[in-house]
Every structure is written in C-alpha cells, then in structure tokens.
Image (tube, rainbow, N blue to C red; front, side, top):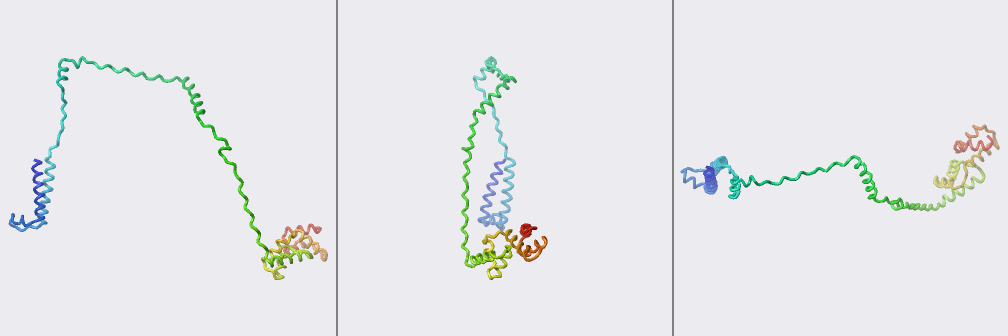
Length: 241
C-alpha cells in the first residue's frame, strides 16, 4: 500500500513541475483556464497527502534472529553428549588475610623513615639567599653658586653681627631694609654662622646695660625683637634671671 502512495506522490511531483512550467497543458486537458497558483496549490496538497499516507502505511521491518544449530550439535543433544561434558569449576579465590594491628604499627615507622630518606636535603641559607648588596648612596647634588647679591647680603649680615645682636627674623628684616631681596636676605641669615641662642643672650645683656627689666618683661622684649620664646627664655636666664 505504501508503494502505491509513493507512486502517486511522484506523479504529483512531476505534475507540479510540468504545471508550473507550462500551465497550458492542464488547460487543454480540463478545458478550462488554470493558473500556476492553482496548480501549485492542488499538487502541493496532493504531495503532502500522499507523502503522509505513504509514511503511515509503511510496514516496519522486523528482524527476527533465529538461532541455528549445526547438525553436529543436534546429534550431541540427541545422544546426550552435551549432558556428559562437564566444565571444570573455577578455583575459589583466597582472600588475603588482613594484617594484624601489630604488623601495621611496625610498618608505619619504616614507611616514615623511607619518606624522610627520600626527601632532598634543604639548601643552606647561603645557597638560597644571596648576600644583599648595599645600594649605592645617591651623590649629593652640587650646590648652586651664590649670586653676587647673596654674597653681598652675607657680608652685610656678618658686619651687623660684629657690632650688635640680631634675631634670625630681625636680621632678615634689616637686610631687606638695606635693599636686599628676601631671597638674598635669607641666604645671608642662613649662612652667617650665628648661634641664635647666643644672640639672644647678647641682646638681653645689652638691654640690661642701659635699662632695668623684669624677667617677663625682658623675655617679651626679646620676643618683640624676633627671637622665639625658647630663645628669649634662654637669653634671659643666661643674662642672670
């Protein structure tokens, strides 16, 4: 039955191709004008139907394996030879007896000794770590040469300190008053080599030479001159307070 539907399927397929190429053939057969669209619809439905029916009616193939027996085997069965033949029974496997607790305990130290012996000897510290090489110290940058104005400010600062005492900030103000720039005045004060504590002592003694001051008043006067509180206290105490 499936072959019939398969044949109809092929005929419908051929009719579809012919109808799409030359619809005039079917027009002459049915005596009516027919378009390619109708031909495609008719034969397309027919193809689907015949293909479906062909698949439904197809009989599944069944493969039945029938055991065959040789003539010799039949004779053995008939004569009872097969029954007399015996196959040797396999020997039972002997399960290994578990080791006793004492044997297990004895084997553990031996295994540990073997593992310790197999371990590679650790490398010495000298082999692993290289001696740390000291990093080269950075070379100090050469100091820039002082300008003419800075040199003159330094000379003027030394001249002032030769005849009177100044605080650090007071010396800078005096140099700026003389017309030096702030940078030149700072250079002169930084490089004149003055001990500002000793300058506070000199200033305190000069005040006490021409006027009387209390300890707090002398400290305030020194701070007014630009000395720090610590320098002012040091000068007052060194002057006698």
